Image (spheres, helix red, strand yellow):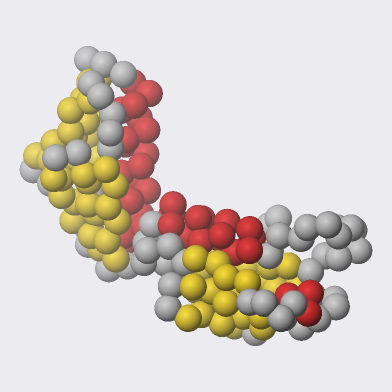
Length: 167
């Protein structure tokens, strides 16, 4: 039997409802449901406790809960840059959708879904994607990259797109 406990940092509250863990903090709320069999979760004296026989599952839950607390306390942020050589790309946020106009001179608008509580800020030729959940932030970045995917063009010549910094 393996046992692990995690103490919530100051400013973050953690709650457990069945198999769903919720971390609330100044940057927002992150909620995750763990569908792992053979693992017991509880909250005692402000500590999140996990025990069971499968060490891999226990460590995964521990790391996920730590990331949830980090996101609720500080949030996560990813920077993206808009690059074009042929046609100027226009980007705007409308509700939970990022609208990409004039990509390769196309008349049709390309769209990327902004996931849950994630916010996208447009600052000139940069996009700042931030939110309390790392999963939602990275999924939003992936949605933006997928929306500007280049098909049937030589990628060495047509390098237009929206790229995450560090790619």
